[in-house]
Image 1: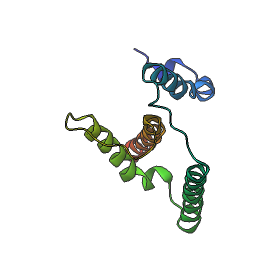
Image 2 (image 1 turned 180 degrees about the vertical axis):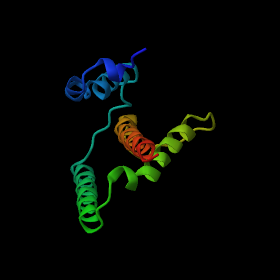
Image 3 (image 1 turned 180 degrees about the horizontal axis):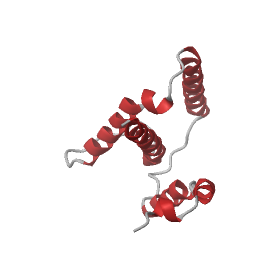
Image 4 (image 1 turned 135 degrees about the vertical axis):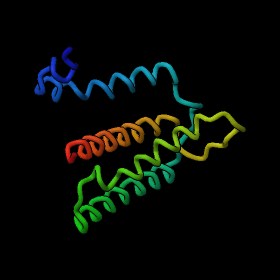
Length: 127
């Protein structure tokens, strides 16, 4: 029996692979709409942008100063993201949210999945 990877040509998988996260995000967005609307002040927007820019700069400098394969470097943080997601699903008391909407977690999980799958493939190819 042929697997999906053997049936679908590699070129088609590369061109259409982006549909997997796009469709998943669209379905999740329709099933779980965002939380209550809140007005974001200009200072909050500025601080969010500065944190994002600082993160990008730190990542660029880290990779420039100490170049390594990203899957190897991010295996533990990606595994931690999976663990945090599992902990949040455990029933318990109420939690107070002081951060972004739930939509923040999908890209984090997406990146963790990409990193962990790449690392798993690397470890399998080393055997």
